[in-house]
Length: 433
Image (cartoon, rainbow, N blue to C red):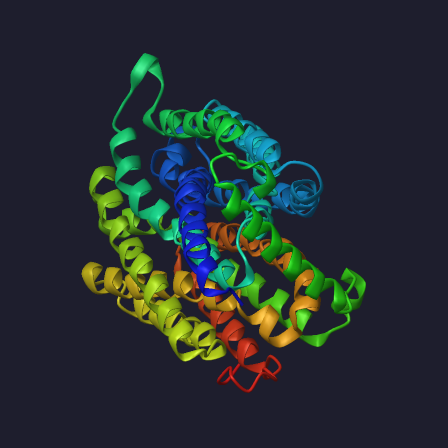
């Protein structure tokens, strides 16, 4: 606990670190997520232009996560043991180049290959940033730092949707608008990758922008927390895997991501075919659910922190999202009602996430959670492959999105049930787990 004379140093250090790092890292994640899902908007022209079936597009969109899985955990370990600044910069430059190259594909195999390598290039960014944040934020500030970082997901879609509508209208140098979407949205990753090399600092001991008194306080605080953590028995991945709740958390994240990415990747196409509106109007309408999702993510996180309840704040949105998707299917002939239910659905599948990531530590304990979070994230993200692929496959077989959407709503409902099946938190101060 800080003595009174040191309190101004603590407050100043926390504020200075947050202002220096969080807006920059948040912007990097906006770029990352935009490059991950811009294929959803490119599909408004790309599939027709190249003659891709829905099955081909769904497989190509989802195969990103196969490459992502293979290199995610090694990437996070490199951040911890080598240099976050150099590795994050390398990741961004590489994925920016891959995004640009997606704009030059012509065949399904080229599409599959470039999406695979794009996933491999981006792998390690999210867990790498989470590891990097632990180098700068003490335990009491880390959850808020991660929460503010994750808000970039719905914001990327909210900003990216109307931006995509504008870019799809351009046809420079004989290239279609969807090609320019990949080219123009890949370039910022390369630029900010170079900026990252000069802007980020690996460790507090190297931070010349931090006054020495504040550096010393932060180093002492982090050293104390590391000593406490080392005093507790650590878990290996194999030991953590033998715990029931690790398997449940992994399955929950997989099922929820199946619904999350199945919707995110296909939503512009669903709305386009249902409405018959031009691309510019479709991308403006698509932004509405993501604005609601941004608000829901902040409010659900805030209320969960205020009440210190986690499980129902994660399960509830999954149940509501499943119900909203069912109602969206039932109101398919009424565009505006369907859009309203899609808006509720998007709010739910984004809003559950910060509360979900509080569950590993609550249900497993900190040492087991540390061994498991990377595994949960890596395997759970395979839902990002199955969601888009299954939707595309079922649309090709049935000629309708309804069968695929039913699959997604069942996944979400099952994920909500599994959240409630998690072990109850043993900390009496945490209500309801």
